[in-house]
Image 1 (cartoon, rainbow, N blue to C red):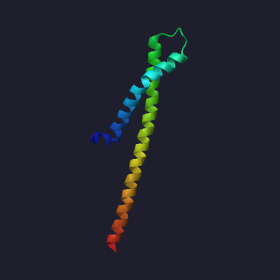
Image 2: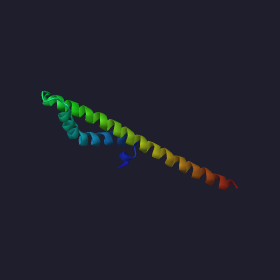
Image 3: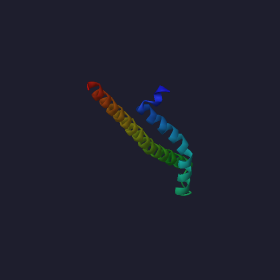
Image 4: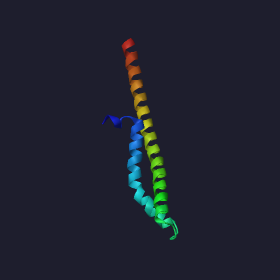
Length: 90
């Protein structure tokens, strides 16, 4: 499970999972939004494109949250380390 700690690969995993989950709802949305004369291939294509865009936005947001969480965690640890270093000097 080491790949879960790497923020780059986790973003792609989130994207893939969200994309797979959103393909069918994207198709249903496009079926409701297009005219009856639109072909099935058009609906599938637009639904897939929409699912890719939405999953990209959501995974980017999740990845950004994870990145900021990791930065805060590292900043807290550095602060604790500095305090311990000052105590050792005295």
